Image (cartoon, rainbow, N blue to C red; front, top):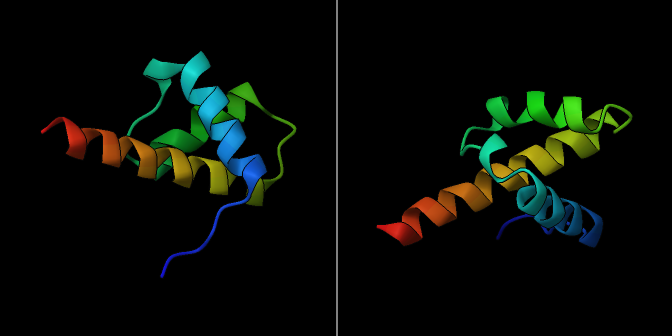
Length: 66
């Protein structure tokens, strides 16, 4: 079983992916830097959680396209 993400993480991820669709990849490390520029006041733990969730969603998108 995986860890459950909070609604704040899910909502923020969905909004960011709609606003900046070309900024995200399936790599966690590459997602952290644009997230830091877009939302600089975000706490490190929340930023990492959102970056990881974005990476996970992008991986699912790529898998579903094949």
